[in-house]
Image 1: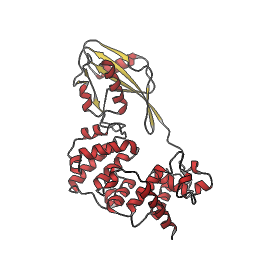
Image 2: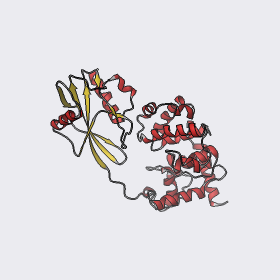
Image 3: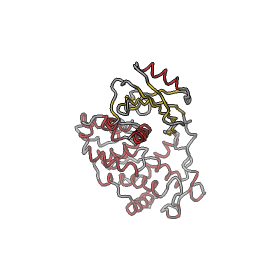
Image 4: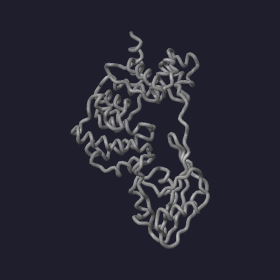
Length: 353
C-alpha cells in the first residue's frame, strides 16, 4: 500500500469513529457549507455552532439571506468579531442570488472569485459539496502536517504556504476529498491540539517525526509576529435624563465598519483632562444649555483584537438638551454594536434601572 493511501485510510478510520456531530456535516448543500465555513473562520466551533444554527434558521436559503438588510445581518453577527466576514457574507449572498440564480458555482476557480472566499473556503466548498479534489489548509492542517512530517518551514511565509498546500494535495484522498478534508481538520482540533496533544493515543504516533525527535511543542513554526498597535478610544456617551442617547455608524474602513458606536475621540495616549473632551464636544455638536462630563470607568478597558489593543474610556455626557437624531436607550437593541460597547451598555443600563 502506498504511503499516501495508508495516511488517508488511517485518518478516515479515525474520523468515522471519533467525529463530532455537527449540523453542517449532515448536508451537501453548498449554501450551508459556505455559511458554516464563513462563520467558523477565526471562531471556535463551541461558539460558532449557535451562530450557524441561528443564521440557518432565519435564512433558510441564499435568497433569504440576500433579501435581508445589512443591519439585520450585522446585528445577528454581533459577538463574533471580524465583521468584514458578515458584510462579505451578505454581499456574496446577493451575488449568488442575482448572478447565479441562487446556485453556487461547482468549481474552485469560480468560487474563489466570490467576495470573502479565499483558497481555504473555496477548497472546502468544492470538496465537501461537489467532491472536487481540492485540499484545505487551515491552522489545524498546518499543525498536523508539520508535526507528522517534521516540517519546520514557517507557515506564515509564502514558501511555507506553498509547501504545505502541495503536501496536502498529495495526501488528499481522491475518492472522498470532502471527508478527508473534514477528517484532517477534526484530527487537529481533537487530537493534535496546540497544547497538550494526545500523542499517546494518536493513530500516527509510530510515524510522527515531531514525536520522534521531541519537537511537538516546537511545531508548527511561525515567523515573527506582527507588532501589536495600541489605540486609545474615548467614547462620548450622551445621556439625556436617562432616556435618550446618541450613536452613529462607523462608515470608514477600519475595525467595526458599518457597526454603530457612541461618538469617538481617538487620542495618541490616555486622556485625563476633561477639558480636551469638552472642546471636542463643542466642536462636534452645537449644544445649548449646560452639560456635565464624568468618567464611567476610571481605568481604561483593555479590548484585544488580532493586531491591535484598544484602551477604551467611556465619558458620560449629561446634557439638558437633546442631540439631533437621539434615540432611546431601548432602541440600542436594534443596532449592531461592537462587543466592547454592548458590554458597556449592558452595565450602564443595569446601574440605571
